[in-house]
Amino acid sequence: MKKIETDVVVVAAGLSGLAAAAAAAENGARVVAFEKANTVGGAANMGMGPLGIGTKQQKAMMVDIDVERAFKMFMDYTHWRVDANLVKRYFENSADTIEWLEDMGVEFAGAYKYFPKSEQTWHIVAVNGGIGRNGGAIMTKALMDYAKSNGAEFYLEAPVKKILKGSDGRICGVIAAGPDGEEIEAVCKAVIICTGGAGDNPEMIKERIGYTYREDMFNFAIPGLKGDGILMAEEVGAVRSEMNIEMIYILPNSDFGPDCVPAVFMQPNLLVNQFGERFIDEEQMQNTTFTGNAIAIQKGRVGYSILDSSILRGYIKNGPDVTNFVHHPESVADFDDVVTEYIKNGNPDVYKADSVRELAGMLGIDPDALEAAVDEYNEMCGSADTKFYKSRKFMKPIVKAPFYAGKFRPGAYGTLGGIKINTRAEVLDKDWNAIPGLYAAGTDTCAIYGDSYMFLLPGNTMGYCLNTGRFAGESAADYAARD
Ligand SMILES: Cc1cc2nc3c(=O)[nH]c(=O)nc-3n(C[C@H](O)[C@H](O)[C@H](O)COP(=O)(O)OP(=O)(O)OC[C@H]3O[C@@H](n4cnc5c(N)ncnc54)[C@H](O)[C@@H]3O)c2cc1C
Image (cartoon, rainbow, N blue to C red):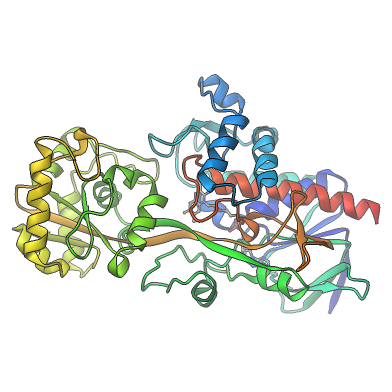
């Protein structure tokens, strides 16, 4: 076994691990990071940007959100069932973290909303000077380069297998599997766990959160996110802590295909359950968490978005009513062609029929019930949505064949929580005492949203991961320097 010695070991080099490595290294610690994958960045490479509050981008765009308002909003939303001190520290540091990233060369296109009712907290990383997908990868590279410039070392394809604890109760190292098969023992003063949750561990999701992968939960199962850090922390005495899912809703087989399909079905169209009954003000479809929640409590955990050819014609002519940066096609003119092709290939997400009754038959809904629901909806289009008070501008009658349906299911970006930390990112044991030398950050620890991901302040997971990563890096460097 190869043996190395350092001050701080960071377990994983995703977003929080990179922030932790960068912060520990800039605070004078010798840092070694072990990453399971053959590249750094984790899920963050697929994302667009973090939350910031009170940033210069917001001031330049005349956005008036500040820490006080965001904090009050957040704590109202979570009913104070989450760690208020951690939330406060995260928000207070978020603007400085945006500047920290800028100092590393990361450019932001500005501060944006995710949907109209959300706040402009989403600092989208500029891609070629503008808004593009996957700017997260630019940010993770900058973090790695910065950490390296301060002496941090990275081992890729080197998953950590075990955290070592001395007989004095202090954490004293890790065992990792090196890329060449040889095990590495890294002796250190502090370990920071940042393994990104258990999105790729269906058994753990089933056991701890209650969903069954690809039956009633179609989460992004990003390879390698097995909950390793949570399990290793528990092995060295961390208290088992609540876990949740970062809920969204999704067309499982069409979300990564041509954008026109999710973009059209995610409009505030009529949304019904397996009984043909409306269950939400469809305007909420812009808030992917709320709609995911509502779908998850329906029979079979399904929601059908229904529209007709005249509504589609409007979206083609005028553009969709609601846009978002994730599904943002230049035009939806190809919608019918793509749906037709999908149906030919047996894609179970999409349906097309010549009548509402025929559509109901395809969806397994009682045709009388769906017809009645559509009739009731159409009637309200002429006056007002007296059922759920959807804005009139989104009330469009469903009258003209062909009729389309998209079958939405619950999805998730990943899991949230599992390891309990305090505001210094120290890992707590069963008596809520800090385990000496053990720190954690990122989604492995993220229990600040309560029962539902807080999308009203977008960029929230990356924001939390970056900021807790920094807290963990600073705390671990401080601890290593003292001991
Ligand atoms: C498609 C998509 C888009 C998103 N967009 C946004 C967005 O725009 N804004 C936002 O706020 N959030 C977004 N998110 C969420 C955000 O990307 C994640 O919350 C964030 O990356 C989590 O950071 P993390 O450090 O906890 O985990 P990750 O960044 O996923 O990193 C975890 C790392 O741990 C490694 N690992 C696992 N086990 C081990 C082990 N035993 N040893 C060593 N390494 C290990 C993994 O290989 C991985 O690299 C998005 C997520 C997805 C999937």
